[in-house]
Image 1 (cartoon, protein in one colour):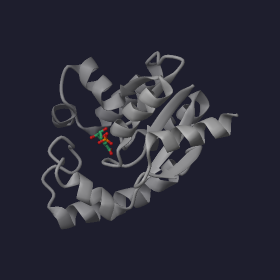
Image 2 (spheres, protein in one colour):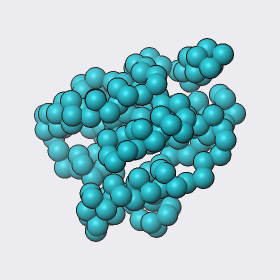
Image 3 (cartoon, protein in one colour):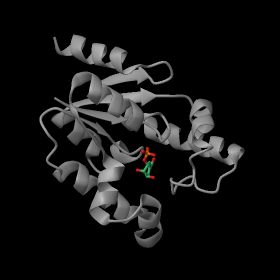
Image 4 (tube, protein in one colour):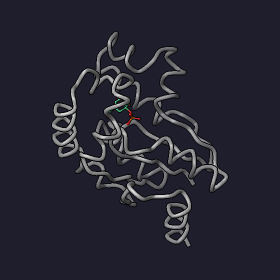
Length: 169
Ligand code: S3P
């Protein structure tokens, strides 16, 4: 089974993905890291050099052309489900899980890791909270197409593995 974790920046997709993969004894891949490996540059540098449109095309190509293993947890980027047919594609190729979190919790988590994220680099706390509120509002229609919607706030890998197992029984 392929499991795609989706959700806003800072909701914990990579951390949860790594733990979930360990729990299920699945492989794990972080889509952003895969992009960095294939381009040989960081996401911030890629955005700076080529712009967001090119990034989104590359993100789609890497999502849809990577040969994921049969049992793999894939942590996607926050924007991945919201461009092209990526959300439909993920629903066709595996289980999708939306890790939901409210804007304030996201802002509190993101305030210390803005520099590695081109869309929020340089924002102060109020600007960040405002950006998250607006962006999340425009992305939720995509995120809500996930097969599973779970609150990320008090989630553990054990709990998540339990939801996934009980639904496929
Ligand atoms: C983005 C989220 C980032 C990364 C890029 C764009 C977004 O991934 O793909 O900076 O549009 O929300 P994370 O969600 O892993 O931070």
